Image (cartoon, rainbow, N blue to C red; front, side, top):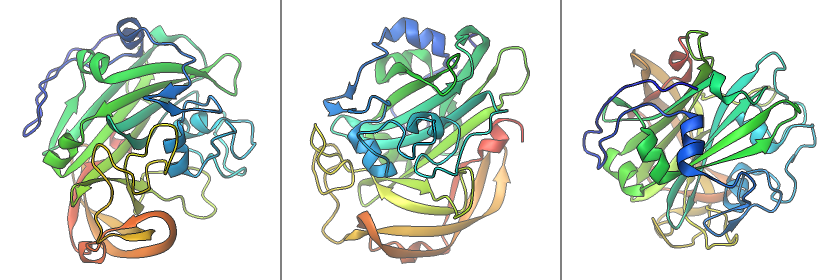
Length: 322
């Protein structure tokens, strides 16, 4: 895997970083145990790389690495953009590289997971770039930052010749609060093949001091999860170590629990449409929003009033030249 030189700065943030990240340098600098089955005291009982808090948010099984029993682990399905809870949603075998993302909260901050599926374990032939988008700036994260704020582990894939690399990045909630809206992005490709072939984004925002993941919702009948226009606002609230509410409850720590004015047992469901684009970023307008019951979460009172507002994020297709 090669290093690609770059430098940038985060306006309004607390970090000044450059250089693009690579898996091989992460492995050297961090020196992780690839089989570690806990993160910050949070258990990963089934060993799929997803701790209880993350499984709870995704609706996957904390005791089975393959929740829908389709032959692909939950982590691999995240990396390959299929649903880990739908047996009819399976990866495209022709795609030999995939990048996916998820997020949850722990007492030490917001954990953003970048999962990279590789059909072979030739890491030196792959290149990976991870970055942030905030204040209208694209910011590649440096190896130095990742060495200080991330961990790396490797997990089995459906192909005996392949694997799934998992980079767990811990972000200070203050970074999201300072930006208001913060997109974490990642893209990967084969060295020498030209443009990256796989990319993913995750959009975080701060509402009344609570960090929220604008989580894409898979439409019924769709075979892949995409960064689409239907979103649920999932509060990332830390749970006690060892399980608890799994990141959606009223536990404290880090960003604390949900404000008392937020409706429990509901989630903010939002539909948006793209109204503009500028390079890799898109401008999206909220066209409908409502609190929907039946979710293990909280809905902010500002949910419906978000209609008509706009926000910027990053288009994964543009990241790979689409």
